[in-house]
Length: 227
Image 1: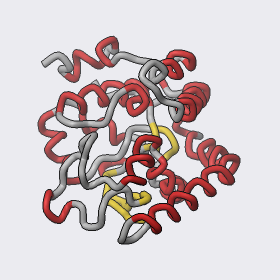
Image 2 (image 1 turned 90 degrees about the vertical axis):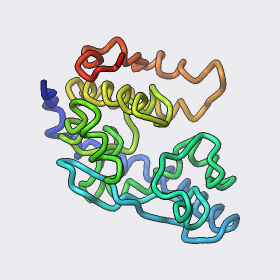
Image 3 (image 1 turned 180 degrees about the vertical axis):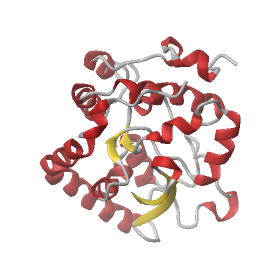
């Protein structure tokens, strides 16, 4: 039942580093711009870290541009962020919509803790619960987590276990099927999804051949997606 990891993973990190070097001028200037905007519009540190679970469940510090008010979880505790979460700042909403707050994770990629594309790393507070409630959940941690991914492009942010199950299906499918060209299509799809409107949201994915309904995957039944 365990997914067979694609052989492309043997060289995947090296390709990611090459992509980062090529795109560094654009990524670097974008990070600096939104760090400045965050500094000017809200109190608190510009960059913050969260503990996430990486390959093999190993914990690491993941870097992000702060998109919420300072001490956002002091009252609510550790919870998934909602679409209209009042803790998110005005600049943070823009960053989250375009996933710009995730760009500092290029440092995690350089350190070998993440790759550019892969399953998103989850917080330890959620991982243990998800491993007990969702079959095969631990298999998504067989590989390095990613800044963006197949599941993240096709599905909205998690708000409950059903959303996690859907993303897990696509994560496991990605782990088995990823190739260089598959990753390049996901990168193009990620860039194109910056242009978003009601009717254009899925078009970039369809044009790149990476639009996927998790119910059509062979992993859907194994995960119990219809339960």
